[in-house]
Length: 403
Image 1 (tube, helix red, strand yellow):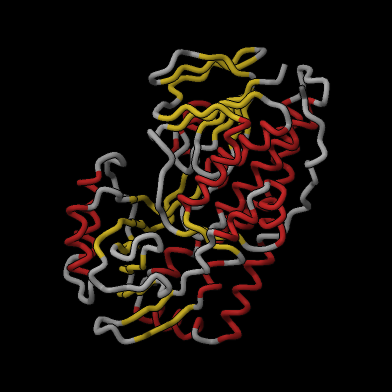
Image 2: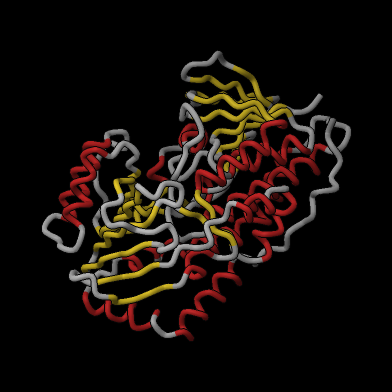
């Protein structure tokens, strides 16, 4: 009989892990706090041979190419709408860019034959024993699993329960980011990418909704010391955003006015997670829960690579006979293979806030001058490709099922 694994989180790393664990013969349950898959969201990208190889082995590369956005060019303007800087689609879009909601759906559908999904619930207690983990849920009855994997993001619930409070592992990087959708009062076309307006320490931008020409998406970034607020109170978050951008020109007043009716607000700090060891007993972390960066740290690509390696190492450790297995060895090998790679990618997130919202007029002018030079732009693209491919990726596709 296959080993029972609980995966917490059904965004990106969770379904990717569920697919590979199920393919290797594990009995997988995925629990997700949201009542259904989250739709929409910002575009995410994959770049370099490593990302593309894992997507191909997972069997989703062709479909992602079919639904790719084609990249999102970025135009920066001044208060009067005059062009200050233009970044081509491949700067942010990598080799393949897709909407986060589309990627989540594809991975979910691909993993569905291999996993049980439970939406609208979450883990409330983990009790490790010698031969398993007893798990309590907010709504469902308690259940026993052999292993538990936290794939539940930067604010991981599993990490808090098994490793300790979030403040031990998550570090604020000096900026906050917000997104929401609103009516397309700018008349933006689906292929026009985004238009952004900067003042020191703040970025207000808006981009076309590729699914609905009548809607656009706002993306705001602002510098700030760490704020105290309720992550589950959108009205409080709307007030913070409004205060941070009060008095600015361009389209900012109209964008802020649309916040009142926004029902899909995302608001969070730009932060990173650093966990000394990615496993404790029979519980392990994957993706942003282990080594996340809110924006710019290639977290999406790292998450699918890490899920592939973790499942592969567990399959090798348990072997074709489906015996007791050696999860400790598997967790160590997984972390040894992925940690350096993930931390290298994660460093990009440290620069995201200062890049999007430089802190002074001098820094703004310097960013615009540097990125208007093709040599520097091409160098940044090459570096991104290089960093995303710095792992010696094992081929787990021939690993025998544990059943």
